[in-house]
Length: 155
Image 1: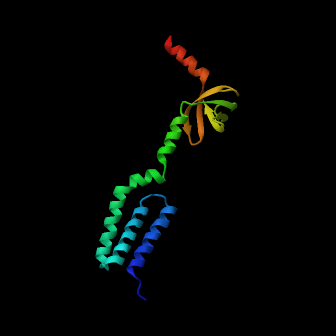
Image 2: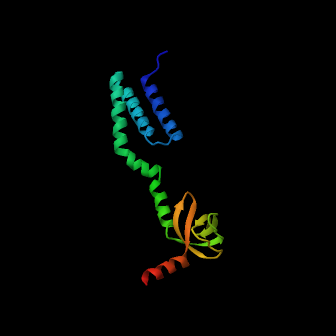
Image 3: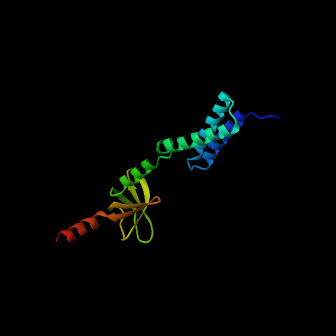
């Protein structure tokens, strides 16, 4: 049974795409593109195996270099996550469950409730400033504390 090189390259490309879904490292995608380019070249030109491998390598490397940064920002979305975290810092919220260090409490920020920690005890109903975001636990400081520090610094 003789298997067509076009089919082999096509299946290698498909395997790269499927593996990329399981292991989101975002470089196997470009080897899949290279394999499909090699498949198309083999179908159109009946090339020897060494030329097919060269087409695969050149297309994979070129697509990786030229397209990875653009596609990564579209598919991965890291920039949006960082922007959201940056907007959270220095925002204010209301304490809905008292925060007594080292235990967590809860704050309300933009209609959502977040787990929160603080260096000092903060009572329910106090307004707090968000200082840091650590894996869905928000570190806060009471706003009255901020005003006292500003007062001491100005004297």
